[in-house]
Image (cartoon, rainbow over all chains, first blue to last red; front, side, top):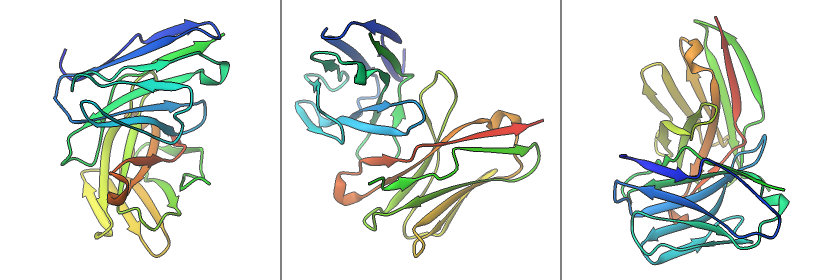
Amino acid sequence: DAGITQSPRYKITETGRQVTLMCHQTWSHSYMFWYRQDLGHGLRLIYYSAAADITDKGEVPDGYVVSRSKTENFPLTLESATRSQTSVYFCASRDPGQKNVFFGQGTRLTVV
Amino acid sequence: DQQVKQNSPSLSVQEGRISILNCDYTNSMFDYFLWYKKYPAEGPTFLISISSIKDKNEDGRFTVFLNKSAKHLSLHIVPSQPGDSAVYFCAASAETNAGKSTFGDGTTLTVKP
């Protein structure tokens, strides 16, 4: 499928488990981002990447790990999930010349 | 300290009337502003944007106004349609911050038929 896709769409995990959220884009955009959206709040930046093998922290990076070995993929890993990480996670991408980003459909993660 | 604020969590308007969504920011380094629209169970989609060198940008029914001195922007939708019912996020970015966007909490717009 063309565009940006996230998997899974829904995930329930237990406290302390490691979980990885996947993000794949077909545009070859150099920039990719991970945001979380908590109920009634806006999107907060977790991590971003300017290119393959280049990643940097956003506003709320604690408890998360990212990697970017290929331009098209940007997985987000919760090393040891906590209830406070229950949220909807959005992946996004853009080209350097663009200002707006393109979002995936989101992953709703529940940590019990 | 929230740098981008949307003080109205919700707004309800009648079909055909004007919808005005407001956004305030505190960081004077922001030089580009965007509005995104989000339907339930979908990711946000880009709607319209404005550079800090302009005070107005128009795209069909959607117009964004920027008042730099007041650090305020607004999105006008005229005429409003039921399909416009969604959550609208204001976002701001600064070239000095790698163009990363800071988002407001969103305003839920309901357009009644």
